[in-house]
Length: 88
Image (spheres, rainbow, N blue to C red):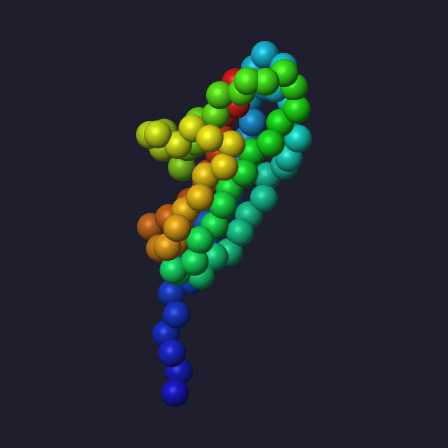
């Protein structure tokens, strides 16, 4: 017997805008995540803290997502997209 599984691809494109002394310390990555799993997107940078973070999905602001890490729990097909953060 075959079991149907939903597969959601969440691409994590991490683009860091260098503002002040923020220097990207990580590069773009992608992840394939099965529906129902969790994924954490992480931004790291070198420079003089404090840093301010803002995350976007497909170019749209993700309101309230302002940390270096962004965790998506219970991934669903609607979560698929291109994610990036701006660090200042």
